[in-house]
Image (tube, rainbow, N blue to C red):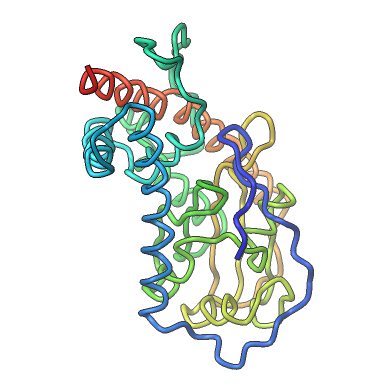
Length: 288
């Protein structure tokens, strides 16, 4: 599976599915294969960030770089892989500059009128993603669904409910065009799979992973920023084949995707860049 082009402001733009369905006689992955793949993909991003930091700040070792990442991740309350991805993807600060982002303007988080959030949770990614998933599942009337975020050219599973372990392990990372969420990201539009068992978009391994979880239909809603870039995806899963959704439902889903995508863009330019600024200050202090 090839890596996909990505930029923080653009989200993810996977290749468009070809429509062909490769033959796989045994679509089930062994748990050991899933664990190995997920560990490899997860560690790869952190490893790249360690190398960047060690070289940039003349750190003694990659272990020292990892400790810096881990510490700032905890202090900033963002995931380690999110911080590592930001380190790799963000242009380096000026050499010996006291600030990574001098003159950066600060704004409040955008409103999320359709989501059930406490006032104090408007800045929490975990709370926003939980509320976004709840909103989508309420509109689509199903208890099963998941949220993915665009990182390192992939969709990375960030939240889920009602789905079993094999499903969540299989779809922990998505970087191939053989899923409905990839199609929705590529075309920057909502995609309804009325019947997973017969839809051409899936390869057989993906189809099996969805069906074995008890999902027979799915709907994917892109989380888009103001420029139309896809920063994530919310997908609902349904026990029976779907006839489709009403125009009112589709409009409500689209509005949710737009609102949450705008919030994710704010989160990147505020919370994530704050974490990078903190990391830069600590690395410069350690170096001197």
